[in-house]
Length: 213
Image (tube, rainbow, N blue to C red):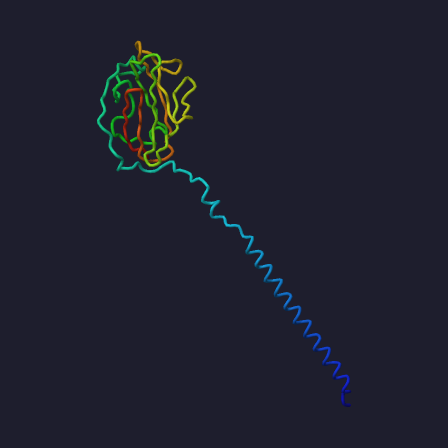
């Protein structure tokens, strides 16, 4: 039997309509997909600035540098045992009103005291209102390291400098009028080249030294 010609035309119309619908759906899907992709791309937030803004932790160990700038020659002064409670006489370096610090140009090793350096000071003769300011600077950063006086409660390195003066109660000994013997403590955050700076009205001295393991 031959197919009816009108039936053939009907089928052709249905097929054509289906093709139009499928094509329309494909175009709609393509447009939706393109818009979604663009929206997602537009809302991506860069994280580079946030990461770069985080502080970098300083290392706490490593070798001491061997190329630190050297200090000028300082004077030495020997103090008798009764001045600081030592078993023997102690020779300190300095000039003017302040004596203490490390031996000239000697490396400070963290392993000796665990990143903390105690310095005993003999200062004088001081007038009642005279003060001496002491700090240790990291030469690479220019920043002071934590510092504090040693008291009956132990070391308290919470400031960026210490002040040595004639007023109690932070002195260890007052061996003779106008002279004071005190202890100080400094914490080193990292190996490096450092400068001990000592200043008072009308005078100052400094000493460079390397620090590390």
